[in-house]
Length: 312
Image 1 (cartoon, rainbow, N blue to C red):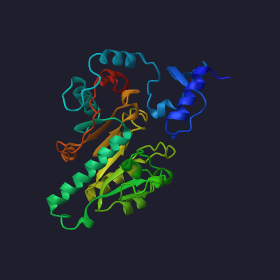
Image 2 (tube, helix red, strand yellow):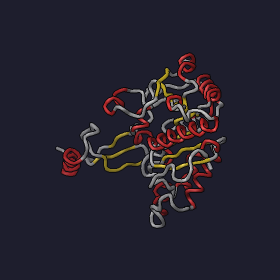
Image 3 (tube, rainbow, N blue to C red):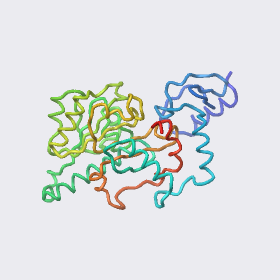
Image 4 (spheres, rainbow, N blue to C red):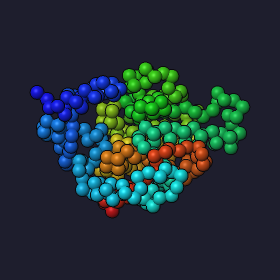
């Protein structure tokens, strides 16, 4: 018989929460290292890691100490003010991500993807205006987006539009329009998909939800050259595959390319809900004050975690 604690917790979930997950019939209570423990005292070897979030496992001493030290100082001040840790973390990310110049912090991977979408659309519109194009012919605007079969970029309306599996998109149609899906690692399909009407190409160097499919170096390099030829931005989604999981800090680096934008989240903060957008300077310049924001996006204590993900 399950304990009262287990029965109560499952009962609350069944009667109070949205039924968006089919959870198994045990209740997790605590964790240590790679193991989780439920309210019945059973131990589980955790291969899920919070869906790729808990890169250091559970109860890591440095994470616990960092949170304990920061909590009585500042938990939240919003993005309206300067904080020391926010600037330190941005500097640290750029120091270890050559080619990028600016950072925007947010709450999650989906939010980072949404921000990248906004940057891509505005950057393209500004480029067209400078060239005297599109202003009088909205149908000619540079708004198309390319993603790939097997892709997963999140659950919000823009991110899900870039996610190829129809079961995620179809119930919520119409999602953000203008997305086309090309086959991964198909150079001819890539050529067909990227044209002058495309403002951005979103690619996971290693697909997670899609089945651990690796984008070949040749494919990523060709995507880069086609984006250059057509004035499109190359956006790499390293939300799940980044942070050293492929031998380099970022998975795209082994292909020898420079993306225009990179989106991060999941293991970035070892369990805290933090996402980030990194961009090249001329791309980041597309956003002016007031164009984008997020209430909970101010990084507070994360720089002290730098040892585990950059060796510093």
